[in-house]
Length: 307
Ligand code: G3H
Ligand code: 13P
Ligand code: ZN
Figure 1 (tube, rainbow, N blue to C red):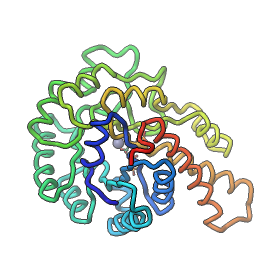
Figure 2 (figure 1 turned 120 degrees about the vertical axis):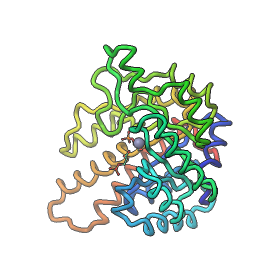
Figure 3 (figure 1 turned 60 degrees about the horizontal axis):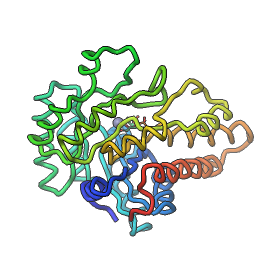
Figure 4 (figure 1 turned 180 degrees about the vertical axis):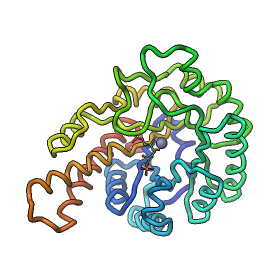
């Protein structure tokens, strides 16, 4: 059942678990996410970036999710705009039927981010839709980073408190040292859990972890085995994801892991069966590999059997 984002995240916040927010760009990805949620008996966020919306068409994105919701009516599903870059983009998503939007004005100065977020919150709340915003910059923190440099990049907990209070945003993504993609850390993985806990204490709202792909060893190995090259990739370890959930993270954004798991299967078949051109033969194993990663992630985050 399609529900507003706050409904899923307020429950997760109260009960202390994380809900995976999985990106999709086509039928295969959305199908794999729902199949996994059904198997794990877990609520889900399904999210489309502006690029994904451009690729699918917003009408197609919404109707695929609604069709899946009819197929699996017992699963609570929020359809979320990932990294909305403007008020107009968020408004279009709300009008098209999204039940949650992110306004990402985090690259602007604090006051501008606050003003833009407040505007989106007013519009979205008139329609019941939940809003996510971001504070700080998404980038890895090196071991030798100075306190000042760290403060310039990561979320400022006091600012987070003021931001949530004044913008009335429903959930917040605080930068604590993650980044998007497959190469998150140069040395040992490192996240600022102390800062996260402080943000939670001061805001109490559901918090969001961007750049949360883990790149488990078996997923990297499968990609390498297929002839791909992400040997030096590094994701957020499972133990870190669990510590982040303990520290107050309730929405866990995951895209890269799904892409890698899927494409590894496509490339394997392309190498093995040079005469093959039936799309289904490539995509079915891709979907299966993706679903496996998602079911495992739901267990790790604690959202399995939370329906
Ligand atoms: O955070 C970004 C997501 O992984 C979506 O990426 O803009 O390539 O669709 P995209
Ligand atoms: P990953 O690149 O770690 O999967 O992060 C995805 C994300 O944050 C989408 O908003
Ligand atoms: Zn993100």
